[in-house]
Image (cartoon, rainbow over all chains, first blue to last red; front, side, top):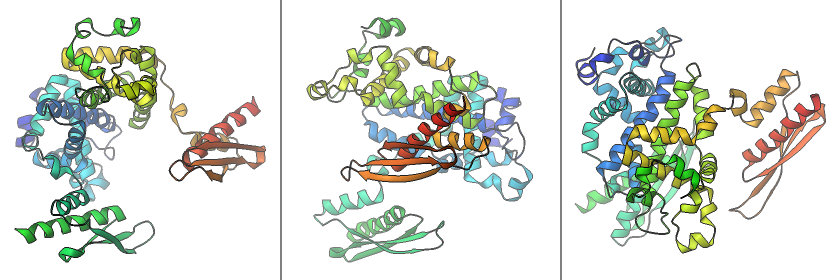
Length: 224
Length: 224
């Protein structure tokens, strides 16, 4: 058991069947963690929502909602799973082991949710709350502000408007790749500032957001 | 207070500020129920998920997920709100009152979530669980089986295949209405059975699902 996981996980749980099942991917056994993951997702959602609600008594519903989305998502859960070395304890089938399933974000994230469910089932909601809040402690102390949570296109537009400039122009430059795996290249142009950036991604929207992010950084740097 | 709401709502809550805020729509006051609704949604999600998990120990994650979607959605929440006469107690602004906001599904559903949050905040999770399970008692006793939860197109296809027929054909017959309010008419054709049904809805997908539902009923009736 990893030092870190051992430290934060209630001792009573570490030898139990439920915890063992929480660590078991469907590739390894019929007694896998998918049902636990489904339950854990709702426990996690409730604990984080309640914590944000109480921590920020005057935040709007929209800000709370964006904060939660920034905390409860596959990437963040996988990061936390890595922090507690959860990957070392996964029970994976041979195929997943070979292909590095213990490093896959979706597997790490799902397993963490299943572990949260096992704490809830074995020890009740108050202990599950303690466990989740411990996992998220650092992140709940350093919440992004409202501006940081906005998407790059909105942030860029607001930055330009605050300086009296016109809104940027977006152009789709190219679409490449097979039909089921297309790559879009979009350009963001701010003529008056002579800024021109490109973003490449799997959808036009994402490519524009990337281009906007690069443009945002350029505009901000130019002034400093 | 409605007989029914009074009966199921913990007495300790009915005079409190938090409950009053839960009933207040944003059209009526700055102290409205949007934050409570955000919190209540997560309490509700957890309580129903946990109840389904425990009630159906051998159900797959997929079935549990479809069951939850069939219980926790705007239409069902609005139905429950009507059952407990929640609309009589809403605090709406003049505009919403005039336009019949107390009957609007989204307002009823959101308010019910806010009321659930107020029970959780004032009396704790165990009481909130009792409250939600009481609201959903009838529905949790009569859960739809896996087949009923499938979408009509899937069900129709399975029915036809079980009888050795080919899959049905879908055609888009027309699109009418303004650009922002289009209506799609789709047809479902099962040539070999001489079945031809139509569905009209706000998207092509929905129109096809409607046509499939009518066809499903016809095919089943024809055999009985």
